Image (tube, rainbow, N blue to C red; front, side, top):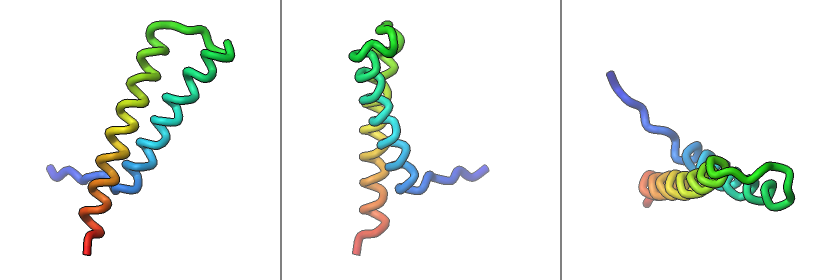
Length: 68
């Protein structure tokens, strides 16, 4: 069984999406659209961290593949 790595651009897009979710959730909590819960706060934090890590991995992979 062979595993195929994700395209670096897709990794960067997923990372940016997760970071945006991690920003939007606290904003919605702040303006009282969503109720603040421990789960939602930790989920927002995890989205921010995972988004940053995945986007950075995508960026590093992209630069290594397109290095001249």
